Amino acid sequence: MLETCKSLSVGETVPDFELEMFDPVKCDFGSISLKKLKAAKKWTVLFFYPADFTFV
Amino acid sequence: MVTVSRDTKFVHLAWQRDEKALAGVRYPMASDVTGALGRMFGVLDEKTGLTLRGTFVISPDGTLLNSEVNFYNLGRSVEEILRRVSANKLLASKPAEGVPAQWKKAGDLTLKPGPKMVGRVAEAMKGK
Image 1: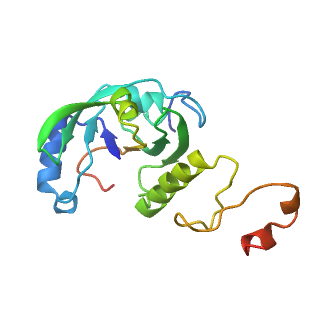
Image 2: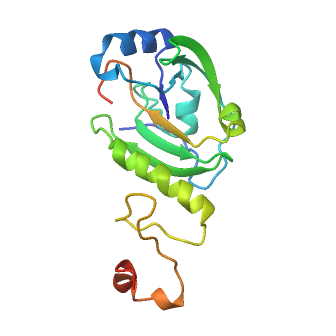
C-alpha cells in the first residue's frame, strides 16, 4: 500500500539539509537549514504533513 | 518547530493568510518541493507523492531523538510533542535519568534506574 524508503533511525545523526520557507512572523520568504539551527543551539521539531489546505 | 510539506513557499503564504486557524502561526513553513527531506525521514509516500504526518525531534547537536509517523487521517497532539521536547531537554542535562510515561513537565518525578529500582518501579513512582 505504502512505498517509503529506508530512513533515519532514532539515535542517528541527521545530515544537513536546507529548504526554502515562508516565515509568517516576518511575512517574508527565506531559507532554513539544519546547519543554522545547530549554530543557534536550537531544538528542532520537523512536522511533516501531506499538503497545505488539509487539516494538521 | 518547522512545518514541512511539498507545497511551495508561495502556497504556504496563501494558506497561512487564508486559513483562520493558522492566523497565530509563528513557525517557519518549509517547502520540500523535491520530497528529498521527506524521503530522508521515510515519510514520503512514493505512490501518492505526499508526505505522511511525521514528527521528528532533533537535538541541537543534530541527533534524531524522536520519530513518530501517523497515517494521512490522524492528527497529532501538540501537547505530546511539547512534552517530548521538554523531556529531551531535561534528559540532555541528566542522561542517567529516565522520564516516565506520566511525566508532564520539568519538576515532575523522574526515575534513576539502578539496582534498588529493579522490581520496585511502583514504589519509585511514588517517590519512595
